[in-house]
Length: 311
Image (tube, rainbow, N blue to C red; front, side, top):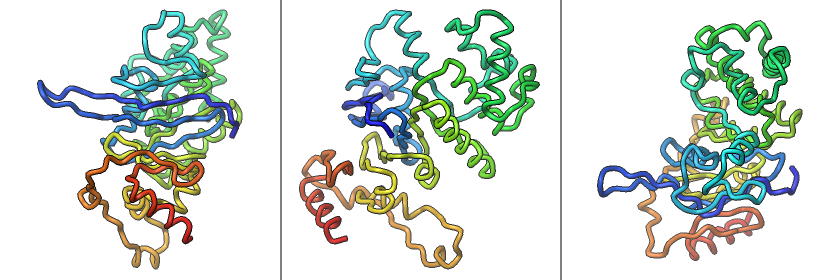
């Protein structure tokens, strides 16, 4: 992992109106950085705001508040068409459901070449065709697949097409929004290994969004845990799994099954009930040890430090 800061998220907020009076705070003031060449994992249960975070970063949603900077340039705010084209080429997204994210009326050739056409990356039809066929082979498909339609492929193959489409414009940063959750377990590892391979070969940086913590640990350098719009813990992936501090992180980790019958018989689930931790003091995101952050009160902060010191 290199030390160049590629993405900087500061106090990001994304709220949605729910009727006349209610507001859903999907993302409620989170902050984190992503460095060039790393994979940053973002985990949490359904509805915690992790996908909304990814979509707001890439401007599929406009931010309610806060700031997103890419290479020290603000992502949100008024931009010219030319600036937006440049931004869209640098940052791409792989979507959760490969079936609904691919146009069923377009051939694979046209789906993948859409970005190539928009950014004028091919001089002629021959170069366009060659680029698409090369991308198909890069993601483990055959060039003959270019003339087919999405419905002719399996879920895993469709996700590979989605990955090829994201790679077509030669991006630096890719947001992978639960790219394996709609796939069979047997296919998930293949897709994750493909992403790791592409990262090495193309010097890519990933924001990997998922709810499967075991898979996130496998692919991510650092991991952030979200709960109801807030980032509750952030650390190096190995450190997070070794020393989970926030009770919600502990509850997620306790739910991970292992292929060991003896362990499973004795496995104790840790249930997180936020009511057990209610306090008059507003929790803050604090650095408990170098590069290990937890959303906690001052009292909890001291308890966590003591807990780490006693290990």
